[in-house]
Length: 268
Ligand SMILES: [Cu+2]
Image (cartoon, rainbow, N blue to C red; front, side, top):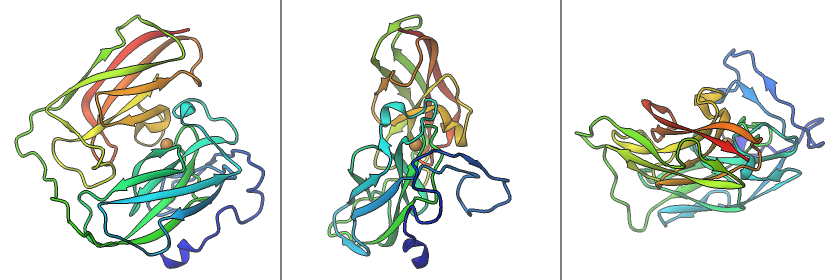
């Protein structure tokens, strides 16, 4: 693990031209816990924070990263890949937290045990295919000054569901719009992104036109939300009729069976 953290992103031949070359794996188990597909974004990742082995006493770990040779633009997430454009994922101990576009972010340490942990910054294409060659890791040590109370699952949560309140079916949308939802028997928690699953907790994904492409349906995921809304950018979506989905997800980003909603609108 220590050796992997020393890998210099972008080293090796042919990864400095900024092109995107999805490489389909054979599914033979190479790459350990990661997806069978890997992208080659050409991105060069550097991590200013946390520093190697940083001691974190607060209950979130601030991150400050820079991606060179790669244009970061979350407006295109979930829409067709574009060479040299994408976003990045943060993983905590090998578990996806979320996608990010700003240099700075913070990862909650809710339900994370004190001790040594590892953050990984992974450039990704619009369809969320990770570029593992360009990924960089940094270890840190969590020693909370004031420990958070661990959130426990909800023992008697009923069957979760989600509905879309806005836009209405058949609406005409331009530029962008808020997808507004209401959930039942389910608590949205940003702090639990990527953490162990807990009954009755999670978040939701906004998808366009498909819920089944890519890993865990994320190939067409526009983004994740832990509130009652998500702002949909139409920058990467062609005019015409499209279906937008809201899908309840557990903390590990696995869709909850049967808990999704769809609305069909016209994009102008
Ligand atoms: Cu992503």
